[in-house]
Every structure is written in structure tokens, then in C-alpha cells.
Image 1 (cartoon, rainbow, N blue to C red):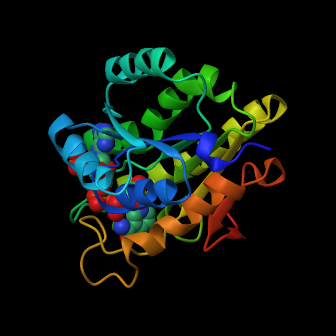
Image 2 (image 1 turned 135 degrees about the vertical axis):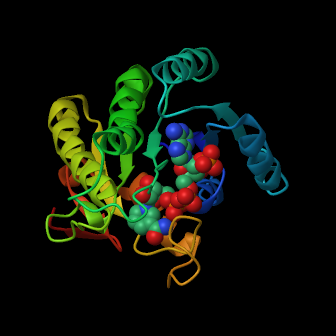
Length: 236
Ligand code: NAP
């Protein structure tokens, strides 16, 4: 059996919030962590913060809205690492700001889906050759209760629909990749104190990161295609 010390994980949107806490937690589990961010400056600053505790973290620029950025990162990773054990699609935006399903623009629907739903599809497609080389490859899609059928909110329409789509992508990818042994999970971190969640949220970023880290280390192929919160399977 391979221990976490032989494993490499890549996290999107790792420069702050839940993504940063996921990077920190995976480092504590012994993973080599590739912290990615769209801003090189912010990403490198986050890596510098983590490097004081561990030399097993590196930075890679990755903008989830850009196919060119994703393709460039995949080529670079193909040269740098022999396999990828874990991919965490964490990066996300929450831009509705007062829009409802009755007023949201097509442009905003597309922008949110581009980052939160279609970026993860493209990244999984590009990183698949590296994931398939791992013994127990796992993909974790950081979704939201707003993407559950009973959690959709008219007050965050583009966000809700983008996470509903991410849940659908999780189901489709799990089906498509089961025979290759690649497990794909969706999870909700709960309401978390980050720039996105705000300061009134009850959970710390570390609490929000817990289920993603648990899935990265213990998620099984039998549970592939399922949605989790607090380490428990939830209905979509
Ligand atoms: P956050 O503090 O706003 O951080 C979002 C992260 O995503 C940042 O690193 C941001 O980078 C990155 N990002 C945004 N667009 C990107 C792009 N095009 N390419 C690459 N990175 C991009 O949010 P968070 O609270 O940590 O949320 C993390 C995930 O948890 C999201 O998927 C969110 O939907 C989900 N979630 C959060 C909560 C909550 O209560 N906080 C609840 C449910 C689900 P920049 O710094 O460059 O902007």
C-alpha cells in the first residue's frame, strides 16, 4: 500500500480560504502538495507561508477560466511528476450580489459556470493521464449545499446552478472513470468563515476542509459519484 508520503495532490484556488486549509491539511497528512492559484503573486505568498512548516509544497499558476492556462499547467505537470494521486477542484466564485433567478443575466450565468463547473471538467480531462498512473486516484469537487436539489436558492441563482452542474459533473465523471479506478466525489464544506462565507459563518476554514481531506485520504471507489458533508453521504 502506498502511504501519503509518496502521494501528490493538486488543489485549485489554494491561495486563501478553504483551498489554503485543504493544502495545509494535506501537507499534515504527508502529501506533496501543488498549490495552484490564478495569481502567481498570491499563490507564491501562500506557498511561502506553508513552506515554513514543510518543504513539500510547490506553486503552479492555474486559472480555471482559461483553457490555455489549464493546458499549460498539465504539460508542466507531465514533465514534473510521474503521477497525480489527488485533484481537489476547490476554486470558486460567488458573484450573484442581489441577482435573483428573475433578474440574473445570461452573462453572469455563463461566467459562474465557467469557473465553478466547466473549469473542473477541463482540468479533469487534462490531468487524467497523470491521475490514471496513481494507485488510488481521487478527484474531489468542492460543491455546496446550494447545489443540492433542496438547497437551490433563487437569491444566488448563478452560484446554485453552477454547483448543481458540478454535482452532475461528479456523477458523470464517476461513471466514466469507474473502470479506470478513478474515484470522483462532491462535497459541501458547510458555511465557512472565508472571504466568500463572511465572518458570521460558524465554521473555520480547517473545519470546512475536513471532509475534502478525509476523501483525499480515505474515499473509496464504492462511494465514487456521491455527495458528502461532514464525512457522511448526502442526497444530491
Ligand atoms: P474564497 O475565500 O472566496 O476563495 C476562493 C478561491 O477560489 C480563491 O483562491 C480564488 O482566487 C479562487 N478562484 C476564483 N476564481 C478562480 C479562477 N478563475 N481560477 C483559479 N482560482 C480561482 O472562497 P472559499 O470560501 O474558500 O470557497 C472555496 C470553495 O468552497 C468554493 O468552491 C466555494 O463555492 C465552496 N464553498 C464555500 C462555502 C463557504 O461558506 N465559504 C460554502 C459552500 C461551498 P483569487 O484569490 O485569485 O480570487
